[in-house]
Image (cartoon, rainbow, N blue to C red; front, side):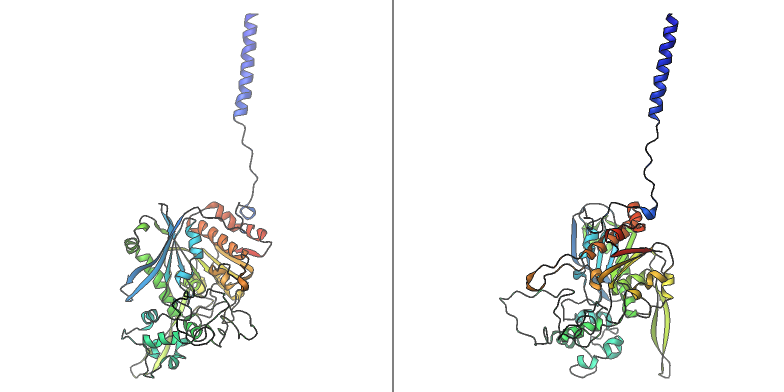
Length: 471
């Protein structure tokens, strides 16, 4: 009897232990399987994710470029918190400036990036006033303190006689500055300043005022910008005709090459950057570099990303005859890992051809919209060419119905007539979210961001008003 009871207890113990062991090794529930294309990450593009980093914005950092005998000014936006962060170079629109182009850079910095924004020579300091010093830095090749007609880009030569007030065949800084100051808003003439009256803030992109002579001078180097529809009594508005019959200047290959040189100078000058701004020490991850740009800045990003460009050179023979020679250049910088082109440039402008994009192999995101047209008549279809013609692999194209050119420049809601605050533009949220996911995927290797780019979250959340195509 005793042994029978012992055997029973042993069997019961063995049985219970087996049950316990079986429970311990039960597989965890299998999560719902989703393909990358069906992935639905928890990022709502209608409300761009808020950054967790407190940021520092430093303007007027100076870098010297001995090779080009120039000084480059740039702004740096970066997290205050210690850490090593990927670096994004942002190239502003021609005729804009780095202090007008900080909305997206500040947003990206708040998400853990160091963003460096150069002030290219074609920047303007105040609407209607051209910066003569910057113009001379760019075009005074023989450094004699004056500009001949031959030294200027072709689109500026047509206005040379207008600028040359003393008709001596040369332009001085005084002549250029004087022209930029003539006239006021609406051509009423320059009025004396009232010391008691607060200085007027520069016009922001999309505002309804424009200068007369000032706009004509801006148009020498102005980026192809969003043209407003014709308005009664106002001419054709900004961008297309500039309201006084001046069309924006087309992209210029030589200026594009100079802009790329600005970006390469920054990448070459990490030590000088840290000396100028010690808080950047140990924060620059130069193994993870991206380049972004808007309008002419997007063109700049395309060039440094590997798009080839045809440059026309004038060759003078011994007998004095001149011929035109076209050389193809590739400005790819292998330190750059991905590019973001906001309202990019297609073929047949700025030395780009349809063949140019075949060498653009880097991960790339392009963005445009149905109202994203330029003064030269190019539309969203033209701006899609870099995406369509570049080699396949990590290429993304964001298209937003109703988005204008300035949607992609980080324009903020502004006060309408009567002081009424205009409603926030949801397109701006879509731009922020899409660009952030692109940077997180390509510079940080974030898997959630990769799934977002390959999924349909943007299309679904916007009810089809914004979509991402992939190649």
